[in-house]
Amino acid sequence: MTKILLVEDEELNRTLVKAVLARADVAAVREAAVVDAFSLASAREKLGTEEVDLVLLDMNLPDGNGLSLARELASADMPGGRRRPAVVAVTASVLPSDRAAALEAGCDGFLDKPYAAADLVATVARHLPPP
Image (cartoon, rainbow, N blue to C red):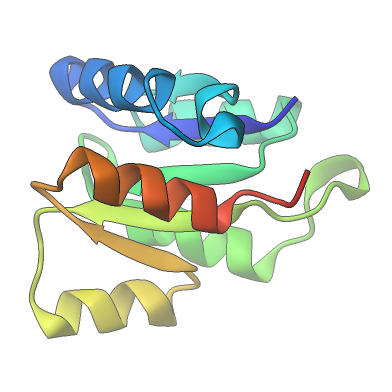
């Protein structure tokens, strides 16, 4: 089963993302399991123990900037020989320099907050592995 790690500190935002994905018109998105992480530490713990296909990564977290995790994933071997998950930055920091910094840090995509539900679904669908 496809697994998405949602790294977001705001509970309301996590709930919204899960609701949008659960109602997606794309089967692969709708059927993906979503695992929550509310901090970088929590995300690192989950990535160390679970195989994840996609990370939806907030940039401003209570214990640091999400780009630090993106850099780690871009430069490190995954535990147990697992493949690196795709990483999409999801952030309200929407300046061109923010987008460039995210891509330079190793993010595979960038989604501006606030976003339309259709944009979230399309972004997730684009970055999930083929069935």
